[in-house]
Image 1 (cartoon, helix red, strand yellow):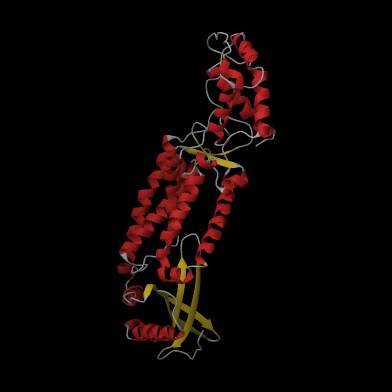
Image 2 (cartoon, rainbow, N blue to C red; image 1 turned 90 degrees about the vertical axis):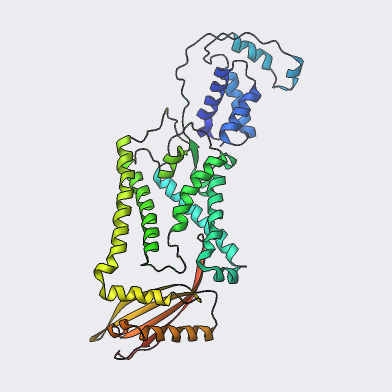
Length: 414
């Protein structure tokens, strides 16, 4: 930034360099600025830093006496007047350092962080659709496995741009004027940023993910869903309980903060108390156990229709043409009557032809009619969906047909 908002950070940079080394050159000030900001100073910033350098050089606090520096022939490339400036620093009166700590940028409010995440989601979505356009046929064939394509894109996006390579700023953060910083107020390295990004990407890419061959009521799916639910719940509880720190769980684990690059600096950031940490993280295993027990025991406790649906779903999921199948019951209320409909939602591998759709629909209806659950419904709605899902973008086409069964009320196809 070239505006007034960067005056204090500039002044802090010059004072810090001169306190550490009263003989520091102006080039060392520029190097320190580039190290902290993640990029070299612009021409207006160089001019302002040079002005502050001249202004503060005679009053900067020192902890030991500095001797005058004899100019050497190698100093010809330094800014004009640097020799006299060094002499003024050497003659400066001794003063105590008011604070040995580094001034820190203020933490970013959650409104800005959420807005930045929304912008980043739009950016990733556009990238995903651009990738999907020329490879749609391939992606339809990959189905839910396409998330393996979106995962590294999302991971690298947050990991690389969240590091000092891009000054800790994704495109959303740059637009909102916020950035990722370590506890020392400096941009973090790529390795640490990639670890932080992993903690962000795994929950985001897992939302709504389908597991081929595993139905929504199988024990494996229950455990996977419980893990994802508790991970999200733990993160939310952590944010609420520790709202004064403005840290998410991934920030706490990786010792980072999301800060505003403008505004008054602070001496320190609030920390997470031990009791708050125990409350926020202690709930996660308890909820995981409760969620898993309910999901695993509910089918056997309820039995009846619920168990029959589970059996039917497993039978239909064995079809190699399908990624996933879900069977549910719906009730359609019409004039003077209610119709109970068994809905079979099948995710087809690839893009089926009209003939393939008709054959699959007929086969699914035949299997449903042969199942004991048919006595409890009036009609079967078969919905065949062909979709791609790469995590950062998705698209689908679907076809639906309503088929009355024996004893059902007359109905038309949908």
